[in-house]
Image 1 (spheres, rainbow, N blue to C red):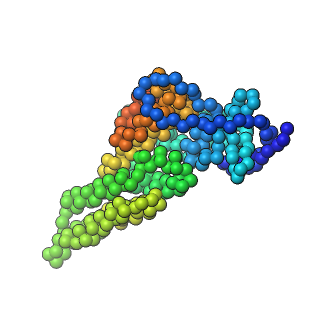
Image 2: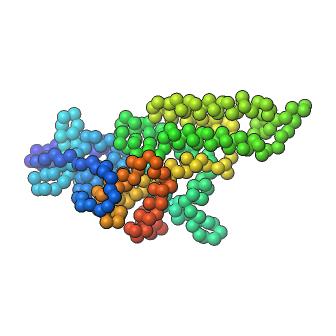
Length: 344
């Protein structure tokens, strides 16, 4: 039988495999509303592998689910007009089969699911009782929200052209609107802080000491508020992900130069987006790799229902987080048991 070269999309290694006769089958993409159970086939093994790579941020535009003459499904790749079959012995797919997840801890979706579980099980150091997800997020401090969003927007800028579907899933939660609200909330925080600190005087002229910097009260508008408001305007004027990332970096730099305390209140918009993204990618991971489904639905219907929920732009993140909590209960997921399983 003729041999063909297959290139590993993870490490670039070339592997020679037999070239079986295949018939191309394009995996269906479903995003229809689901409000009740309906019959739908489970994703075949090849489709599940492709979905795993897509979730990991890998460009899967040239990958297809194919069925050989023996009826088995495999993953095929079309590269520069040359068709090849990706072997089950491929390092990535072997790891997916063994662990049911992508084996790279840096990948966003595996990390975020582990992070959600960790925060849900985080306990008070004195009582040993769970403190709740919101309190666990607050423990990370105010600076965390800006560092996290800056990094997220950096990744989105890369995905915008390379993987539009992955970009859309992430931008659903962290986007320009969220950054604008975060920035406006910061300006309100600074004004509230200024209103509570002691007014000092230098030769009879009132001034305040804002995070170690002395500023005359009459100069607050020009030196602090106006410059921050100008940066907010630059965020509003962005028209592409790269520009949004740069504008957000500039605002974060201004935050560090103006006033930054650990216990400042995190933006409501950030907390809602964080809960929404955490819930969405955790639900997706559980459905695809841990045999979890919504009541009276199979795997494909569960994915369709999840997409249906988030397609509603008014469906807030905290609501989806509530869906996740119910989902964990109905699927009998023991979070701490899962964490012990991953540590093995």
